[in-house]
Image (cartoon, rainbow, N blue to C red; front, side):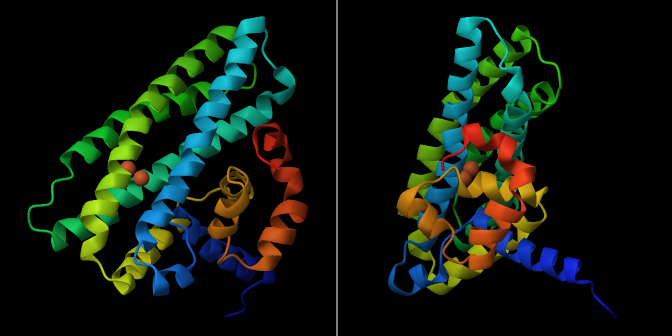
Length: 246
Ligand SMILES: [Fe+2]
Ligand SMILES: [Fe+2]
């Protein structure tokens, strides 16, 4: 069967993108048993920054009582990407990460972390609905601001608790090899959650800076991170640029 070049390219991109849902170079795993928690910390950073950026942007609009209509389309893409990555990440934890540890540790109890996911999801759904309009009012923005704040309040607690649990209780029971296998599974799961890649990939990369971005993209083909995303796909994501890091 003949596979088109475009299809082959998109398949290889999905493989690369999938790894970003628990991103970290496999080289970490060989000399460092904190493979899983390092990846978790990075994706949590990707999810944390947009909450602050979104709240600050809305505060500026609310204080001047004026919608920044010029940047609304980019803001909509940015917040929609946040919700997509949020769902993808939590779904991977609920369906793959927690069950893996429940199997490994007989008395493992993830009820609190799972409950926090369940509390966060309706908020993310509401944000998705409310941001997805072309002509927002100041009242829409006020509602979204409030939802982002509620999400942030819950998220900060959840993130801290989950990172501690993984690093102190879970990670030590897995070998580096098992950590890589688990991360691969989570990565593959992430592939199906990364649409559209032309928005999600720049969203993931440009919400991190410095060493974090380096680590996050270390397994990514050079052509993807240095050419396809910044050059070929730029038209697709450049509206989000005011909210991303350079
Ligand atoms: Fe998480
Ligand atoms: Fe979580």
